[in-house]
Image (cartoon, rainbow, N blue to C red; front, side):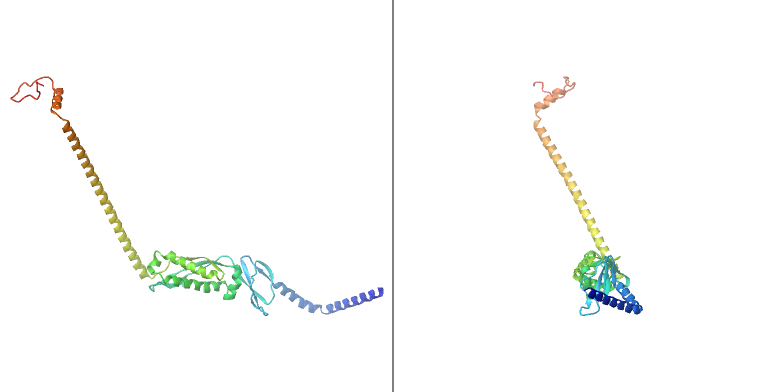
Amino acid sequence: MERDINITAHLRNRKTNRILKILERNKVFILLLGVPLFVLWCLCFKIIAPGYVGVIVDLLGNKKGVEEKPLHVGMHWIAPWKKIYNFPIFEQNDTWQGQEAFFFQTSEGLNVEAELGITFHLEPECIPMIFQRYRRGMKEITHIFIRNYIRDAINNEAGHLKIEEIYSNKKTEFLLNVQNRVKTDLLELGISISRIYLINQLHFPQSVVDALNAKIAAIQRAEQRENELREAEAEAKKRIAKIQGEAKCALIEAEAEARSNELVAKSVTDELIRWEALQKWDGKLPQVTGQSVPFIDLKH
């Protein structure tokens, strides 16, 4: 039994020594092969920074293509035959100005120029679907595909409006309808629109601006005249009401005075007159009298 154990140990030692000799003879080869493999293994670690999501594209095998599950923040080991595309999930802001501005026509066929801006973000779980659909980066997605959605929404909304409406009272409603239409269309694709806003002002042909300003000025003058007319009518009504009130007051006073005089006349009698005269008489008769009877009847 002990002999068998020794034989087994001896064989194991011989095998180990043989392997060590092989490694010793091929250490340069192993070193040349091992270091690149180790470096390659280290390079397969990919870091997804905060605020980003990674999309994995498998380049080999039956499952090659875009993987459905995105990579989130952290370090991930990715096979060498797979490629990572990073997409931001924080709020993005972009603008279309100058040569990139939007040109559209109203219901009358008049041209209008709009410089717009947009604020949006990508839904993290929808980013693989977005990449599979467009096969582009953020710049291309924004300036090609999102721009096309905005252009179509502007054309649809502007086609129902006259230039005078966009120039004056329906500009805000027009932009809000464009925003709501784009927001609804893109939300299904995983792109969430926060707002679409106007930069500076809408640009109209100068001839149209002059005509609209002249019309607005004429309307304002007409409204001013109507206001003045209403003020004059109100002032006239006020004066009429005042005169009618004063006349009514005078009539009431005259009627009251007439009524008072009537009452006084009815209350005055001959006896009352004689009594008032006696109250004022000093007891002396006139020195000279004519044929007329004195105002005091001495008989009474």
